[in-house]
Length: 325
Ligand SMILES: NC(=O)c1ccc[n+]([C@@H]2O[C@H](COP(=O)([O-])OP(=O)(O)OC[C@H]3O[C@@H](n4cnc5c(N)ncnc54)[C@H](OP(=O)(O)O)[C@@H]3O)[C@@H](O)[C@H]2O)c1
Image (cartoon, rainbow, N blue to C red; front, side, top):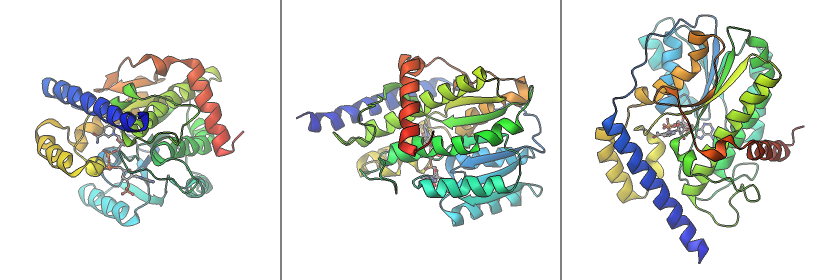
């Protein structure tokens, strides 16, 4: 019986939250990004930067003079994005690197080839994501939302952490930005069933992966503070943004969404504004504070995200799942 109710209840909770977020968006004007400092000499990696919110993040960072690497699985999409940006800003320095977050081998190859180049790494934006995909597994057997949105980014960050530490210094810390979602607030971490084997609900799996990102971000930030490493970590909610993320909705909902989206959803550039305000906050404020950001500022979030035991348990299980020390 629960196997039937669980997906229905999870879907209802997510659509109700979506309705509330849209109401809030209707009442509030979108964030307008202030003029940000130049980023010449800085290097950034943006996963899933070929389209949607990630594309706008890449475009803005490139305009500010940063050297940006798009990590993505679709080379054609990545190269088309680079062409558009370079047509707009002749000086833009943007590259594409093959990265499939559904494959641990691909993540390791991407990190290795980046490290071989001896570039610094000042900004890592863990943006790529998928939502409401049918039940399926990554190359290494992880549930797709958990594997791509969370665990793949965990491994990528872990492999690049030394680079981030080496590239930061007091007053110019490096930063990791995890693009989460308000959906984290209704997520539940099932430590004994992270791969959703018992009951599958795409809605619950998405929310779990977004909560996992917030817990990871907070734990990473505190670990960096404790060892006085010059790295800060943020979790960010970009708001409800009109992108291809919604393509997996059931057809009637998809039609309704595309009609509502034009009126009430944020544009990808507006969604990218909060991601950018977190990513560039160290340049504005020196040693920045991390935390959970929405609407362009630091915000409070739900109690499970503060639970140090839950953060630690998830961190340790993630290390085990990835075969890391
Ligand atoms: N749109 C919203 O309303 C909203 C709200 C809250 C949070 N977010 C979050 O914002 C982030 C960006 O989403 P978006 O709205 O910009 O959606 P999008 O337009 O669908 O972009 C998602 C990006 O992730 C990439 N990606 C997916 N699976 C991947 C994989 N296995 N390996 C590498 N890249 C992969 C996609 O590349 P491919 O072309 O290869 O698929 C695409 O570039 C996501 O983390 C999402 O959860 C979005």
